Length: 189
Image 1 (tube, rainbow, N blue to C red):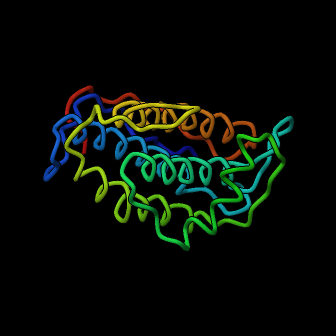
Image 2: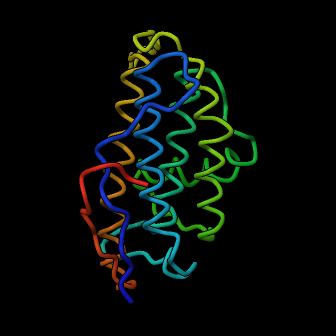
Image 3: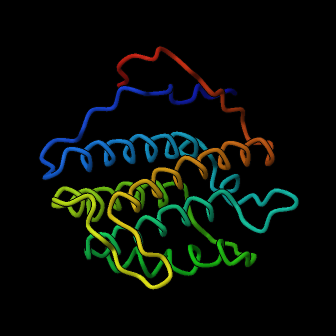
């Protein structure tokens, strides 16, 4: 059975109740990208989520866990607000293994990952970003100095890049088809 994918959206509106309008718009972009990834995985079986395609060292589930883990760390770095402890404990080993190139497996369910995506948004990302008043605030680090804007741009890139990988991994694991849709370029849902 072919799943009709989430249509594209180019008309994002800034989220309400944010101290900085550009941060509000970037948070809306993160929301859209997160919704797209959820759309790509919410119909999968837990077995399909755990499939490791030939030539890779990780599953779709581990990749999505890495995406959540990375956002937890970058939002903490930008704002000082940490993600809930249970999420950090569960996702930290998976998130660290992927960029290190270590083979990793995880017993994650689709429901668990979708819940983590939503909790990340509601319990860390939006509360933290809604308080940001200076998008150019320096984030000191001897290895990777940046700004709040730099972190948000990286997170948008990160979710976009890995979303494409999730789509390819669906194909590589011979999961049910996912039909990429373009839809109208106007207002989305």
